[in-house]
Length: 229
Picture 1 (cartoon, rainbow, N blue to C red):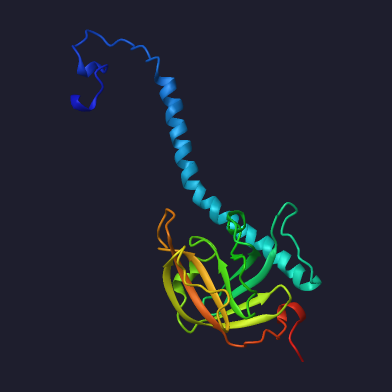
Picture 2 (picture 1 turned 60 degrees about the vertical axis):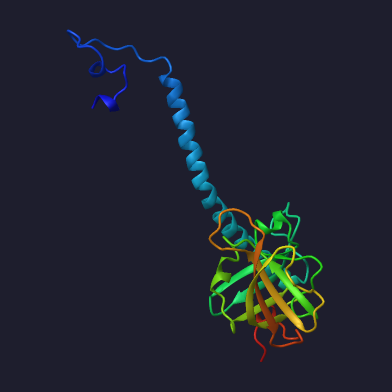
C-alpha cells in the first residue's frame, strides 16, 4: 500500500502519537488550476469535432434557403451577409438519400461550409468535366457508399437539372489526379480526401466519376418551376 501513497502521508513515515492536521501544500491550488485547464482542453478537443459537424449541418440549412432564392429569382444569393461565396448547385444521390448544396469555389473557407465547385471546371452538364470537392468527414462522407451505376442529379443555379451515372471510383494523389476539365463528353467528378477514416491530412483523393445520362441540360428542375403538365 505504501508504494501507492505519497511520502508526505502519515502511513508512509514514522508512527505518530496522535494525528495532527497536516498543512495544505502550497502548490495544491495551482495543481487544481492546471488540472482544470487540462480538463477544459480535453473537452475542447472533443467538442471540436462536434462543432465541425454542427457548423456543417447549420451551413447546409442556410445554403439550402439561399439556393431556393437563387432558383426563384435567378440571382446569386449569399447564405449570410458576410459570405464571400454563394450556392451554385445542389447535388442529390437518390439511392443514398443524400444531398448537398455546393458553393462557388473550392477555397478552405468555402469547403468549411459545403462542397465547392472547383475553379476552371465547367458547370455540370456542359462539355468537359465538372468537379465538386468536399471534406471526407462532413459533406462528402457518403462518397464511401457510392456504387457504380448510382445516379447523381445536379441542379444548377439556372434551374437546369442534369442526371449522371457513376462509371467508377478511384484513388489518386492530389497533384496527379488525371482529371481533364476539357475531356470529351459531359462528365462529373466528386472528390474528397482518402482514406475516409484518417484524422490527418494526406496526399490522396477519392474520386467518384460519372457521365451525363441526359447530355443536354435542357430540363428545368422541378424545384425551380414545378412539374411540367
